[in-house]
Image 1 (cartoon, rainbow, N blue to C red):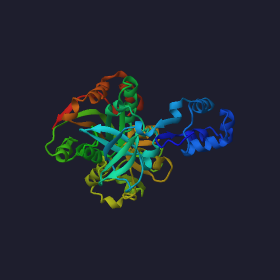
Image 2: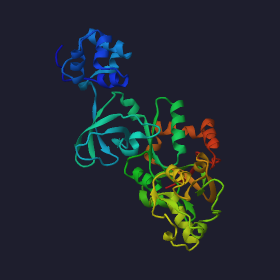
Image 3: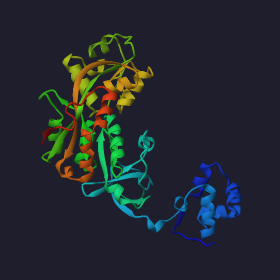
Image 4: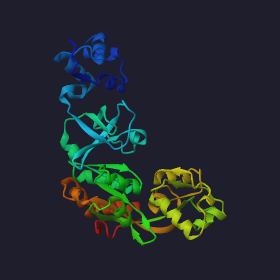
Length: 377
């Protein structure tokens, strides 16, 4: 055997995942332990015979064990969020607006419930916001057929997974972001679609005034996903007898709040202003969590007494719910993306009965106008 700097393997990771020592694998494959050690360290390239024996012993394909470094393409991509200089990071990739966008799988994104698989690894930094990415697969078609949605509605994940069942060649990347952050991601070219639920109390309009302001002259359409009920999540049985936001103060209830830019936070602020209640009279107003699920979990675990979210989230966590407002959740799409085939495929599923069923079972959504263009800006 000889050294081959281009030959890569993940022999050790597969072996250890199966609970095998180097000697165990050597015995099964009919080779020496030193051979296993040399292959794992990259010091030696195994012969065809040994390669086949190793694959058989581990119950996998040869391609699962070995690959040539030079066979894997590399791309330059814009970072959707910063990473430490020189840090090698797993990333998910999508082609948006004519360039590759890299979404670092770090922090919460590294271990999400839907466990986004990595498309590549950032190899070297190019300037402050670009990286060179070594792909883990040479199938660029999958990456080109990826639609990125930034938003906060948990139902988007259900919609995405259902769509991928009907269109196996399509992939939907759901990037969690509050309404304003999603809109800014769209504006920066990091997403094809932004989901948002912001109510402008001055005009009585949903979402459109914010879109006009942020996109500043760029053309976009708003397609509604549905109208959902927003309100106070409380403990089951409502032991504190909370009925309105003013009861949060009179009952000395504690809450968790959402970050600036979130539709839930804006609703709470608007309701408090209507009652002439200073924000900081509410205990926990500055206690920030970043998702609807985090709000519900804080109430369910008894960490706080209440928080703003939706009826569907309350039902999923077995919590009580005090409705305060009906808010329209829209998908904002730049016109330049509307003609792209992956985006069209995704949007076409909004009329599918299975999507409607998922929303109806979840509850808390009025989907009578789902898929309807509600505004053009």
